[in-house]
Amino acid sequence: MRTFMDENFLLENETAIRLYHDYAKDLPIIDYHCHLSPKEIYENKKFKNITDIWLYGDHYKWRVMRTNGVDEEYITGNASDYDKFMAWAKTVPMLIGNPLYNWTHLELQRFFGIQEVLNEQTAPGIWEKVNALLDSDEYRARDFIRNSKVNVVCTTDDPTDSLEYHLKLRDDTDFETKVFPSFRPDKALEINKEGFTEWVGKLQKVSGLKIDSYESFLEALKSRVEFFHSVGGRVSDHALDTMMYADTSEEEAKTYFERALSGEKVSVEGEKIFKSYTLTFLGKLYAKHEWVMQFHINALRNNNSRMLKELGPDTGYDSMNDETIAKPLARLLDSLERENALPKTILYSLNPKDNNTIAAMIGNFQGGGVPGKIQFGTAWWFNDTKSGMLDQMQTLANMGVFSRFIGMLTDSRSFLSYTRHEYFRRLVCTFIGNWVENGEVPNDIEFLGGIVEGISYQNAKEYFDFE
Image (cartoon, rainbow, N blue to C red; front, top):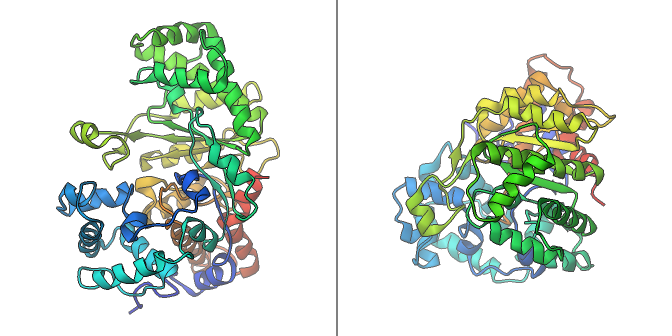
């Protein structure tokens, strides 16, 4: 019987153990997609207590607490931080089989040196131990990044953001980790969502351009891409919850933009036309600036309308969508490829039914002498589980070039989530180790170690080429 989460946790054979400890364990991290606050990084936030750093804003935890019968008062309500922590501690023992169970204990072990299992009995002592550490000046926001060996952090930023804290971080010589913005123009595309015209007003203000036409709207977006680029931005990110595409023209898109700007609701076909032209316009800009474009596809957001009204978005009421993606995705990528303007692109789907579709799709648009130009992104959100990660890796290996995979990202608002890279790297080593143990690949540890290093760090380093 194995010891609970010992040094060989998740490593199922001797080859995996060697690969992890000799090649993966000590590598740095490139976190090319996360939701950390650049303000909190710049200000080097000091956390009040473990609830502050662990439970504030973490809708992964909120969902399972609700499922465990915890009242909302102890999740997002007015209960004390101690009582919220105790509610989480009572939930954790019920989570066996969920990655949150292992992530919780990895975070306690790696960041705070606590080997105890978290439960209702141990929680008061853990509360005291962690809070005592957080009260020191060695457990602040930057320390968690630095101690995780993070070389690059890419936050998620609206085109209208001033990037004030990115500019300050760029000039801060006391912090070695590079913090870059990612361009997230979802609000520019969602012409039927409430607040679109107000957002265009913000874009007008920050760009300094009067937006009174579709042409000037595109010009304003272009100016923001150029501004993000000047601050070190090299990545865009799009939430394409519904994948749609239509061959269209600027003139057609203009018609629907003008209707939306006047406050009208646009038809589904009109929305498709507007999004298609605007997205291809942006894709060409990304290619021109040698950016990486990311598509996060098939999320079904804000399903609980009562709780959306009460708590707002991103509070734990999203799930997988099951929209068809193959044809519109292929047509969108091809529209850029036809003009030799398809940037490096990473495709993710929240629904694992799309794994084979994406793994096959990326092979259609590779080339240009760029290894893995089009990437099947790592298992995301509901899929960053043991089985979800292994399934994504197996599908990619079946149809593509697994050794060119750019690996894990954090996709988190928590400064403690960097242990997810360790979790992922351990699974990569077991995945490859099983091939060796089964005689499917040669037992060439040095060669396989190079592949592990690539997937864990080096491939992303070369793919993004952050300056």
